[in-house]
Length: 197
Image (cartoon, rainbow, N blue to C red; front, side, top):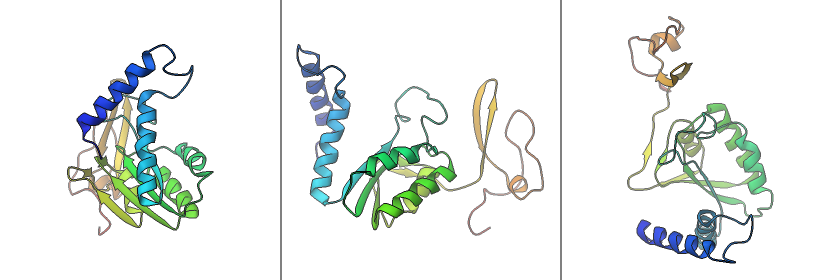
């Protein structure tokens, strides 16, 4: 596998060739897509497994809409399309995501379970929140050295005039002892909920 610097050099070369006359067909794949597909195909050939990359540009890109940068229910249709012509019964699911909708994570993994006998999650950088749930739903998890995942806890997203704000719910809120009110996070006592509480 090439280093990050080698990948960038290869991408710069692809971009330069695409910019030259006759270098890229009208409406053809962008150089970044061509490079990604090349290495996904090489990985799939090496492992003998189907390979899907599920990620967002949330680490380096500009702020995006709530659903565009996170696990969302409409992504189920994207997975259905991605696996429609796959014959393999084993999948490598590469996940890089800040998380999102827990119901969407459950729906995506439920669908993938109908198509594959063994799913291996590969987390090269980060799988947070609902993306952590997706990884935990797999049969096996392979994580990069400097990867991140997050604990699972109940959260509340508040949509206010100044933008979205997401906060962990205090124990007294998720236990039904206090309402969420005001323009900021509720305050309370106790840790975020876990499976054991």
